[in-house]
Each structure stands twice: as structure tokens, then as C-alpha cells.
Image 1 (cartoon, helix red, strand yellow):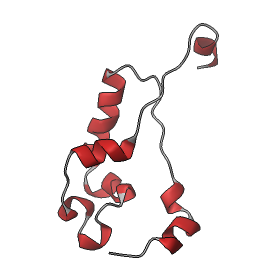
Image 2: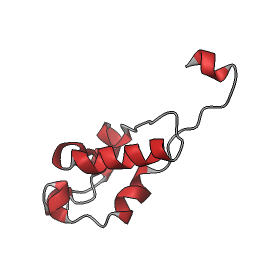
Image 3: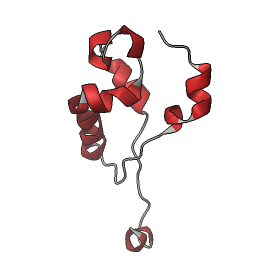
Image 4: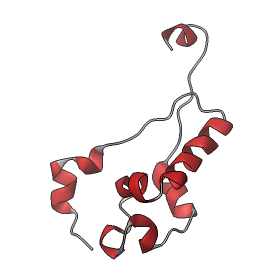
Length: 83
């Protein structure tokens, strides 16, 4: 990757949340009402959705797909009440 950076800019993927929202998923897609909207759970309950979003970013020209583990940390879990 460092060699590529010597010759051009790398393009990263875009927002994951907006792409998930565009798919109008139901509570069942997230593993039930309690987990509705929890994007981390989609990797378990609907890996096909996560994969299709990443594939779409690659098709659009992204070089790199990144992920955020922010919601797995203690602070976000402590301030986000269960549904």
C-alpha cells in the first residue's frame, strides 16, 4: 500500500450508517427489537448486507474499506440505553 501512495491518492469507503439506513432493514434484521439499529450486530445477523455495502464501495472505486469499533467500547454502551 505504501508503494501505491507514492504514485496516487488512496480512496476510502464512505458512511456505513447511511448505506444501512437506505436498505430499510427491520428489527428482525438486527436480531430483534432490542438490537434494532445496532450496526455491529449486522455482521452476525446479516453479513450479506455488510458484504454488499463493502462491495458497492469497491465497485465505486474505493481502495480501502475501514470499520469502526467505537460502539464496542464501554462509553457508547453505557450511554446508549437498550431498546
